Image 1 (cartoon, rainbow, N blue to C red):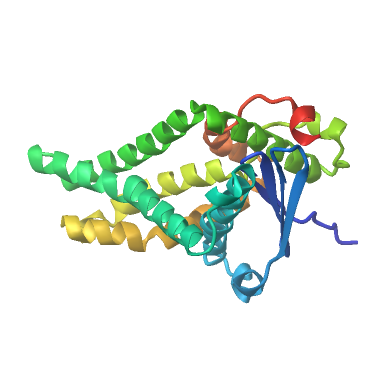
Image 2: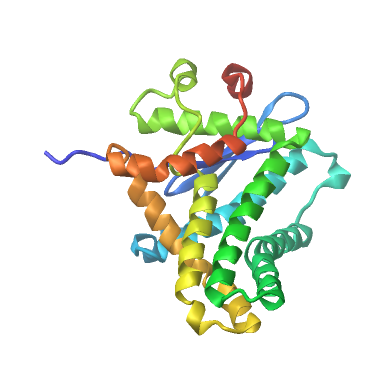
Length: 279
């Protein structure tokens, strides 16, 4: 008899709420200022039901869209629930906000390290290989620094508490337990498929890939263009790595490989009273 595999669920912390995503549906529950729980449910269609979901490498693009598309949209929805009617972000304003957020992320995490490394290279006798290595570690430092700074913001600390609650809930399901408050409270706050782990994996893979293609990108322009064009490729590789490691957690080597990702999650997860957050 073939062993049945549990479906894989993912999630994201929102403002006063949590988003949960399966293969066919996405549901978000958010606490409104008056205390009631607002639930938003959507059935996934289009690209989420296409054959791309089964193609290694390309299915990572869907994961990227989850983070940038669904994630930002539902984060905006959760913010709207906390504000007055006149302050809501909707329609074209929401789209513009999402586009601006994506552009800022690309500039900050992918292009800024290139400019800085190129400037250091031009001011010293640094080789191109050295510049690419510095670029990679600058990118990692920016990502980690961003997480540290954001984690100190009072408004974000409660969001990170929901992040921990989301991880505990998914870990409970992944471990084959009934999703009850008592079972969820005993679970780890860390999860190998976390978006934080995905970000760190993207950075580490980009360091290796950009060093490999270094001889083909000798000018600043070619480097900038390659960094943008290769984002989907890097995301696809990172997704496959996260997916593979999550399925081999009992392997001693995998435990060693994912340890840095799990430790970085401590920057985006706060201690929480699970009962107060989930009730």
